[in-house]
Length: 480
Image 1 (cartoon, rainbow, N blue to C red):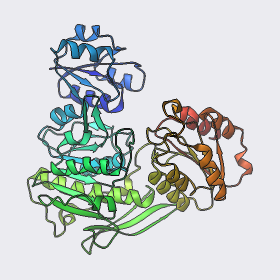
Image 2: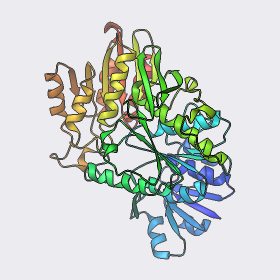
Image 3: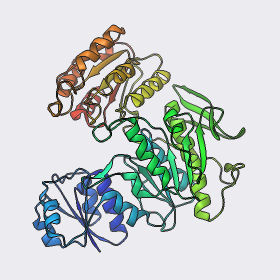
Image 4: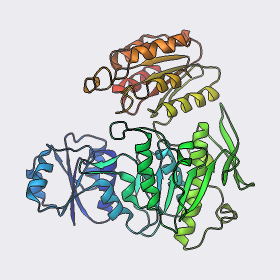
């Protein structure tokens, strides 16, 4: 079998290509820009790379199957050749993952608006620590795993992020539909991705479709504190476990506290204490991620062993994973500079709820520091005014707010675009120092010119699902 990836240098595409190569499949691929580090990873795996999308690459390499990346659209020369020629079958990446990497293995699919990457990483970590050799595909850089992807043993569980975003230009189903979960985690549910979903009801509908394909011998782990998840139809054919803080949850996080040294909490299964966790990961949201990962790993171990989980106390046989060793995932409150009077960190949060949760956690961990939040409106939703009021409220958790340039603002009419000036005025009315910049470079220059040594204790937090045009690294390097 020879498989060709169009758009191979994306994180998910590249990792999947490497896993397919490890299965003994011949793999090649193309991309507009073939750069390190992904180009190095692919080359080291023995994958042939073609720079650009010339259709001659397909004529030359002669694939049996082509994988078309989510970022690839009509007009791409190789796509147009595939559509004209009709001799080579093509699929989206999620379909390939579901068919070739997951196959008949029990899959642990982590879905929800927030926390997918961290929970996936924690679940894979928990299984590895238990002596299981799972396959996994993490959409980030995990600090507690050897890499972001691994095949694992052929019959072991496969842990994967279940993204609600669409699969490809020709397959508008959510990616997670292709992964056929045996164990499904629903961390939370909010409106997001306004470029493909009309409203919350539209997002909810695709999660309903996901629930429908969990088998009767599977498990659904729900955030029992989330009102939007509570509105989903009951999965009466599948065993459901509720996870959260409230008293009606099956698995509860009790006694959560957070301070400069980290966070601690207890896990309680239906009134029976099952373990205490003390770790460095911030926020109650990460405590829930850990609880979900712990529960999924116990269920996955039972499923892989061919035994029925004992739901009177599923942790009695398997125990709590050693999460105290975990560092999390890069770009999730990743500390870049750590001095007594100055802390600089980078966070992937780009949704109001995630930003607010991060800022509340930062305030608890560094209570003596003045909190400066730098926000880059970059995602397809963040650049519009859909969440303008919510972003304003979330950022108001900081003492000072700096907003960078809107990514590709020209794509949106002024009436649809995020009104940064209005946000700044609202923040100032709330008593916050706030300023907007035309470009990220302007924001960076302003920070580089500041004398933080004269400002007392400061925590500088960058929020973006991109690179902030290199500003994060430049500022951090200047302050080390």
